[in-house]
Length: 205
Image (cartoon, rainbow, N blue to C red; front, side, top):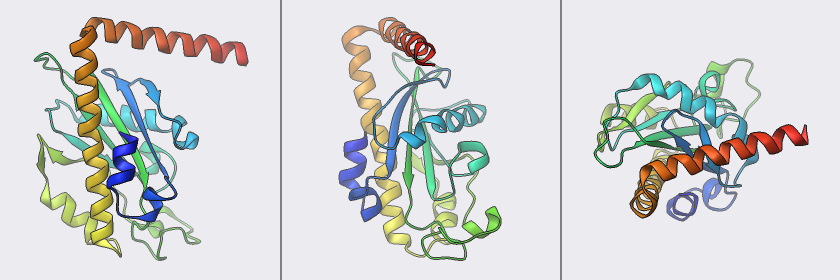
């Protein structure tokens, strides 16, 4: 996911600075794994996933977008996307893929959206959890609202499209794992990985 996102983006912020993160979550919204992109995102991406679960029921091809820091952590330029992954004809998501990328501009009073704001509304556009793609179809109204509030809409849309496309890669890779090992085995190994992480964290503390 991360490699696809990086290579497909337009802005130096993603392509060169690589200020983004991607992770895999189970069907309950618990983080299973995250690549070592930006460790700062590690603590807040699970909150974003949990706050998206209430938007169900989900369909294959849904992509939820948000950046409200009270729901997803960090700050407004960090735009998060969450997508469900369905396997074996299931009616509920077996997994979720989650990504976060620092947009070079999200509106607000200062170009780059990193000025000396004294309140959230001065920082830029606040996006609550909404569908950017609904069943694989672009929700044009959401796209239009976002791009009307940023200074470089073409570059912003290029980065957002790359981010959404990375979820298709994540979906494909997870489908491959399920085809190879079976859904129950994948769930079991994910649970074991989370249990192991908890044990090692407790030992370190």
